[in-house]
Image 1 (cartoon, one colour):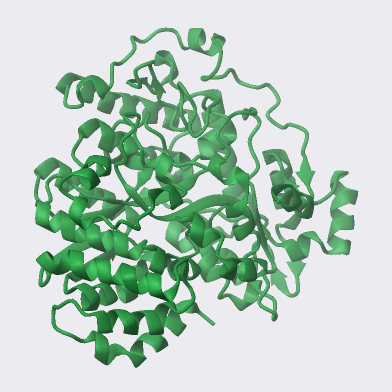
Image 2 (tube, helix red, strand yellow):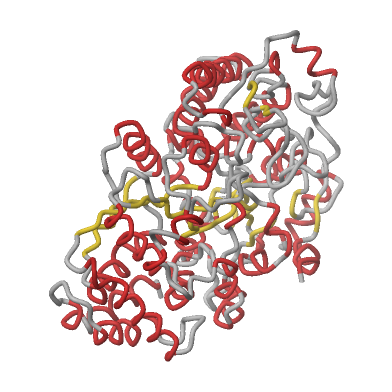
Length: 568
């Protein structure tokens, strides 16, 4: 059964207890724990109640306040907005309006607040992809100092930052924590395990391609598998060998900046991000100052590897995905594999696992999945030591333009929805893990066989190799919008991939030049290199890399079961 439906039913039983005036209420806390949490917690019942009592006491100065927060619309945040926000209000007396909007809209609201100083929201669940922006502009509260000083009286003694698995991504080069992770998900390869293990299909694939059908290690194998499955009929369903999306929309930019380019091999070696050239193709100097994005300044955003990345994505979208995919956005395309006609997807944002497990078309009657998750394959320019994939870390962010009392009340809510009392249950609903204690909880050991490798991945040492956008990007809101606009021209055929990427890197450099002239990021901002012959940079070590004459490397696959065994 859908966890959200069970939640709604349980909460309806105690709605009377929660329909209370704005006042702190331990009775409401106990009703919440009874109806919603139970043993789905990293804490004992006594410790749950103690944590709730702390929230009640800390919230007393803010009782009756009305706080507004915002996040993108995914299952985890729906649960927070619809279930946890009303519970928090009943328990603490602080009224929370938790708005759900598109991720592009979240960035736009944040950018408007940064530019105007107007307090639009009291807290944002904002991707850690903006860590470079927040560190350079210094317009958000750094939480390290906030928790030690003015926010000390509203910082949960049981917060346990060491239990969070993503704080390395929300910590800037200055060693300060700027954001608190609230939900986290990786981009992984997704495939129909049942089809890949069908003896007849396996034999036919081996006969045609000369190697075993399995999890593709490289893009050549992914391409063969996509070709093999596209157009065949399985169990009366017309199958497509790949799934993607291509609408000219802000989410098209994430399709490329969320590590697609580094998976192709565009940037430099380095984890969590390539240095000196990252997965956006932006080069920084030894002081972490951006110096260019085009090859003429040492960047790689218009390099041969970048062109290869974009051309492959467009080619596969046109050849192997449903015709409607070209007109889809991120949120529209994500649930499509759940319809049962997709053989594989190069990367599946694991936030979409939640709706997948509710789809009968891709689940067995015993509740186990017909699909599995595995590491995504890499492109021909990729080398050992490079970033292997993307991990989204949506994180609570407090702006300095938010009045202190409002920021403190919002901080209480941010901690509540990620508290050890709540997080195991929230993780079961949204499957976007942020705490080690939740990942290791016995309930996920029990549920792991029904989640297709997700739990095994998050319990493996490999998980740290998937990372968000790093600190090379000096202004995420301004630069991110350039990606979807320029690559959209390539997707539509209005420009070649090379021409679109030439425009993209030039546009990024114009933004960085303006930042340099304005000096608003101080000695952390861009210091642009002089333009030279791109051939000089290509001849040097690292990115940008010279073109590989034969971009079709020998295809390679691996057995899924052997792969998972290596994680144990």
